[in-house]
Length: 156
Image (tube, rainbow, N blue to C red; front, side):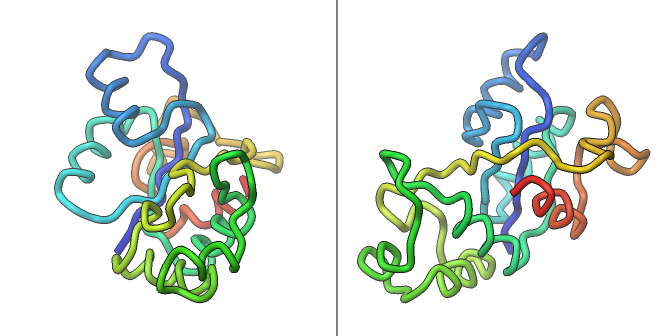
């Protein structure tokens, strides 16, 4: 199981340890997203930065669209099936996305692929829905579970 993590708030007025935690997650700017595996270390980081990020469980369609539409190599070249087949054991982006969702691979497995996905701010009239409140009370922060895919689709 993997998680998609999206940064919702900036660094202004943030405690140093939380700022460092977000840099460990490679979330340096608002609307940046990463795909991370599920383990105790990452879950601790998510809990620590919960007031500045939102996350949820990754599904195949969302990861595949993130890789194909927003995946970038060094030099800002887009990720293609040819690059994936040359550098990994997977033939297409879809196969690679399936491996990421099942924790068989990580984004680091493609050499030169940037680990951060630069997304658009959430489209639509709702936008973030309030970046000062938790998702369970109608805001945008914290764990979303499976609802992360709706947010990421609006941001791709």
